Length: 126
Image 1 (cartoon, rainbow, N blue to C red):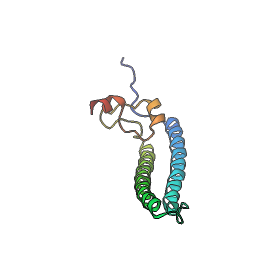
Image 2 (cartoon, helix red, strand yellow):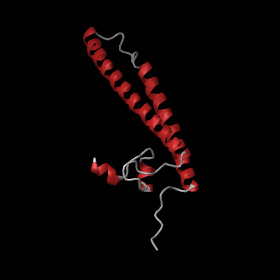
Image 3 (tube, one colour):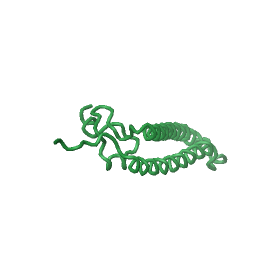
Image 4 (cartoon, rainbow, N blue to C red):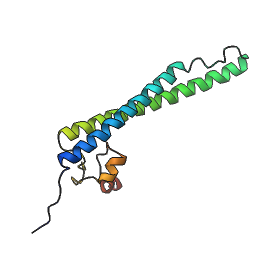
């Protein structure tokens, strides 16, 4: 008789992953707010009364800083979206199943990358 191969995580395991993901969403949203707040406050960092030469350098670095902040915020928003999609997969009981191999993704991988949809095996095939 063949050994039972687990095709999905059980409800208790899914609940544990749900709790982990919700914690990560809260932390990620807090970080996003910090990024947005830093982005909004970047314009005034106390260099208004310095010489014009330094002002020009400062404005250049300010533009660069805003671009970087904006890119980080966009990545953070995508991360939050990916985590929320993982919650949907938990609801559908498809969470933790590799979308390529259809095998369970290693739980250690899911703890590190809870929004993963590929097993290491599938990732290496890419």
